[in-house]
Length: 155
Image (cartoon, rainbow, N blue to C red):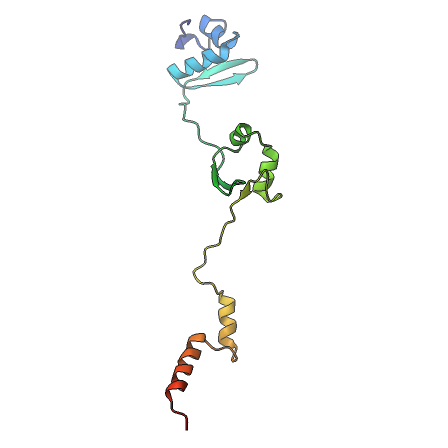
């Protein structure tokens, strides 16, 4: 491994610059340089210039976590669609059509239906209708009325 010097990285045709720009393994040398000194390489024309003021940050995971049902009915959690499709020899386009709703399933995979969270099974509109409707009677009131009628003796 050849030595890489921080002071020579942006001097054209210096040994360090040549290793990181004009070499068959220049990508490897740039990676090693960044691990040692940090920063970032920006491409200017044909060559790369090192910028030391920018601190390297850990990669942010792209995408979202998706839960799907496979053909056997098991829940599968997918964090990277591209990688999952590549590993399982699936079409990424067809898989995305399932996610967007254009397709119901692909190779047995389908979205888990989201169930809306509801506090009560009746909606406010249904409650208003039953309150305003004189013919509708609360079932609990019906039970109370039947109990009271059975308690009273028939004449």
